[in-house]
Image 1 (cartoon, rainbow, N blue to C red):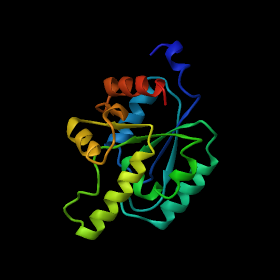
Image 2: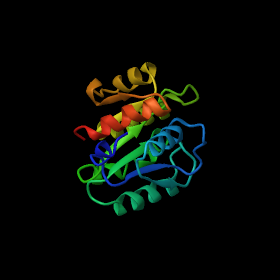
Image 3: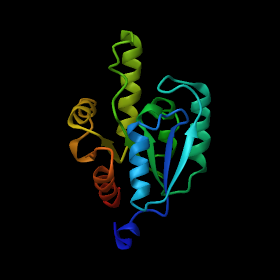
Length: 175
């Protein structure tokens, strides 16, 4: 990436993710690839059990988002979306939210019908507030589109240098 391209991005990108996110996760691999491309990133780790709804994560998300500077680009890990749902509407006009979604949780076969419906509503509402949604593949893109997200807001980017370049190009666009 050239220095000229880098200046089109905000001075720093903030990443909000679960503290327990494994190094092999899609979001962590994308974050490392974007950093390797020379983009400054600040990680904000949320406590709690993700993707389960956790009161400590909800409180931490609210505090974290309220402290970010106006106009900041904020990457949100898909596992944290349910715990961010209450905080996002208050900040969606002042922050530029981008979700990194490896998979959706509402269709987890282990969930009961009622819990799946609640989770679907949470994920659908949160994704509606995103400026962009970065997904690793067509299967995830199709699942996100089933929730009413238009294709033009999706960015298909595999984890790694090529995917990072694709995501950076999308972030340089009109967020």
